[in-house]
Image (cartoon, rainbow, N blue to C red; front, side, top):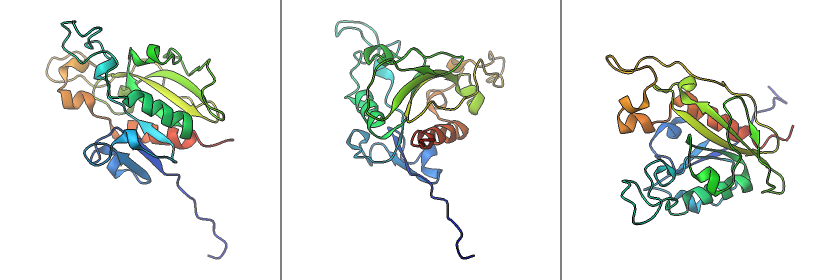
Length: 210
């Protein structure tokens, strides 16, 4: 029909992801991850969904080189987290990390809250503002509760999510409901499609001015 307007879907960059994983099947998403693309080299200009590596910011990271902890040295992630933040402050989008990630303190991000979005008190970008929250992936298809911290950067406050504890099905025979440790490493790390869809929608929302 003459005069019909065609909706334009804003492209989103998915950073630090498996290029053949869940984001590969989402329309309008460009996956950036090894071995195909080093996400630290992402040039813009699309808003991003960022999943920077978390081992160097978790409970098993070594606080000093002499530590006997079994993880990598605290903060030694090859600059991935800092690069992801720079991308968000430049182009907008959302970053996810496990709850209690030590990267939040290192980069002075707002402490997340399970009841809603917490604003960033620092001015980090000319046009965007940052917000943090705590959300459980069990609300969005994960087999465990998997509490997750999000950092969103956009023109305006992000929309409400599903807050509070989730109630996923019991994991395995006799397993406690929502017990993340009962899953394999691959299952724990996996991003459910509904959660990936949510993050992509937040990244697109980040560029809406009204």
